[in-house]
Length: 313
Image (cartoon, rainbow, N blue to C red; front, side):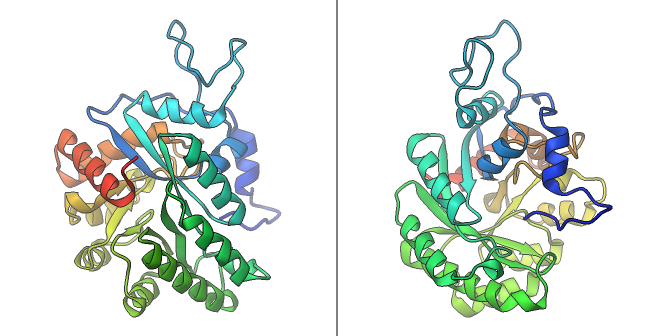
């Protein structure tokens, strides 16, 4: 998930350290509650911190101590999101440690459910992939774990030498999702054809979410025909993302989800600053504009689809 280091290029961790504390202001609340279908609370808190507390004069949230310090970072992120109408979060695992952490957070935080997995770029690095998959399978059986992911294929950060391990891991995650009746959360980066090939080969689980959908309208139609859910992140707000907005426009409302992928992919006009679930309204409003769906109706559809995929909370 992290960019490789070069002398000329800042790593994501360096950028996060430089911009820590620079969370954007809270957007206008949504008219109806929605969920963030994909966030990384652990990475957000460790790399960027937490969104600012409410404005002066408002009640002090329970996540903040009287001296102004953060008493419970997870709760601070959850409260900031709830203030703008984002009342449910899906915490996504990318390795064994984050999957264990997410399952524990979901157990103690009613607004959060978890998914567990080995990220596609993690699989080739592991010395014992089978053991890591056994841990994922054990966690997948927990009640507050509602999905298996993010798993899939990534041809952007992993070269030819790692693709066999990625595919083996992806196929194993598909099997776990089917056996435990969990939603499959798919990471697909520059691997559209291979992702569909593997899902077709294995037989997809009942519910599949294409996380941070990155294809065009043709690929969207291929996913929609298969019954998959398409989750759009802040990238849909970028000026260059014309094809992505066209993909959203051909996706039925009942197959749309929205996500942050926080702390990454912050929507316009705050691109480059830390992202968190409280910024979901910016992406929802952009989706409403690009699809022509009434904002109230879109919020309701996203909420229903999220409950079908990950609920009940």
